Image (cartoon, rainbow, N blue to C red; front, top):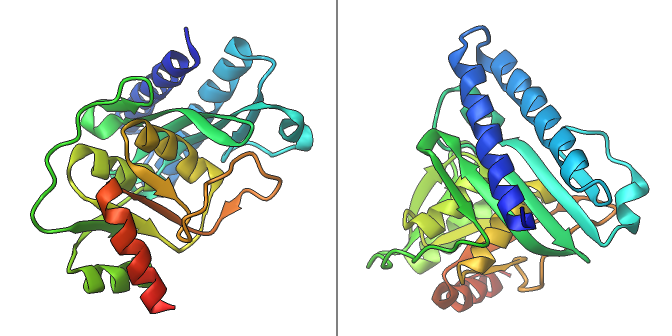
Length: 243
């Protein structure tokens, strides 16, 4: 398999495993989320070690080491993006598998198991026609203040949603036009979604317009913008006006 085929295959398979774990009805609530994280992580980590033994790895659910920092190719994984949504049996959660090459998000797949869909960097789909009214997808539990303020300035409707992957894919799926996040994330939250978004011709950057760089020693990423290209400039103008 190519790297992209591998990423897509692993996210889809991990998604099926997670659905099976949930449907077993032996876990509930937080225990379900924890079990899902552990089972999916074990599968993804072992599969990548078997298929790409020379590459580095960064996973939310595995202890990080400095070994990956010396690698040009590093897989960045989030076994369950949106553990809370998964545990609540919602559909707005995801599985992320990405490959960063020299810090750039080159390959990615995002599975939305609750919707039976996998979006991937090697098989971009046509974007739906943009709506007449702008829609900005935000956290359903704690919308970022900057995002709310920018939405007001642009006259955009807020679309609450769960995981970062689900929000990013909502732009591709035509459920939203802009995903702006300023509340802080980690590399595994955005690497796969950004790789998929870029492959679909979307804009993806930091809030100041700079590139998103992965496989850093500090995995914290303060902010993120994913949107249709035509909306990037208005968003930056609104952010500048906010100071």
